[in-house]
Image (cartoon, rainbow, N blue to C red; front, side):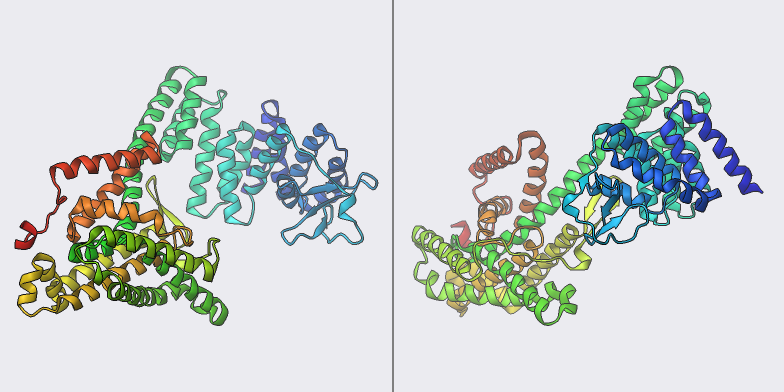
Length: 553
């Protein structure tokens, strides 16, 4: 009995809304009528409703959408989806109406059965214009409010929030009564508040309460709605809407700065991964290695090869592909690095110009070798399930992939720091960095340290390539995108100093993200480069200069 009274009251309110928006009120009546006698409505109306789509006239199509929403026809939502995707067809001769489903099959709109013996080539598409699109969106929003699919109900609530049609109120309130999911209930409440706050026929106190509820939402859509209400009203409603819009905009501006910091940390972690290996080789041997970016590229291609093998032989391991690729990339690129040091670099110590030219030529050779093996096109590297998707924290949007790359960069930094601080190899490498002659006099094999240090730096570049394969195109030119930035980070932070590399990478990443909206991406990088040039005029050894007799000399 209570449900009957609820439906009756909603029907009355929907009828009252006909003067304001006949179309959406009819949709609401259709929804409620479907709850009363769905089988009768569908049986009586389906033929006429579907036939209206075959007249090829915009007013008839708009009326057909209205009648379809009110009819409760089982194929109604699918027809509207097809119309929205420009996949609703009619036969000019037979006046039959059809649509294609997700599998590309032609479906009879009236019955939902597969169309047999119908040539799709002779069918014409139901045309759209702005008025028809508006009617379609309103119908989809109203129909989806009672959908069994939670995602569609949420989309429907958002559609009503944006349209704010007063005649949608009965359908929203009925859906709100039946909703059990807390998140969707809140979306329905926000949609209801948007309708009430926008409707000048509502009581002022109700509108003010609705405005308070919209303020709690606090996103850009809420701010836009409050600004629209403020412009169209006066008195207490106008003042409350203005105050709410200002408060939300201030809050969003603060969150925008937080978002830029997050983006900066994300970029800084990428720069750290790309530069930290270079900091070792440059710091220990003073070698300007222009082929460092190609070590990053080889690490990314190692990830591609691992994933291709897994796809072919054991797809169940795909989510573990990065864990397999990381040690393989480290060993492979580290081995390549040792070969480069033993075969090329060791003959050029103390000759920086020749070293630069030799490693630059080597980088071109490695790029061409990869092009010959894998082609010049970008290669697809997939993301494991744990690195897919995103989540919201307040107004901050955090992608899982970027978050895990930051965690990975920190883990690499900490691991390398421990290697240098607590292992015998780390002690020897620090000794060579600070005073090569004294270390050699104390029995340290500096040649061996050089080779292993170059291999270590190259191996770290390889695992940086594993991470970068998740956010950048895997191509022969991948390393070229990061080599200049890597040198900027190393020089700014202090040659051979890991803490300096960390601070420099994060600082440049954050500064770059704050400069981009103001000066643009290219000019922002130019400004950073000018800043670094001016900075090293005052501090030639960077933020954190190494200490030692050889360094100080």
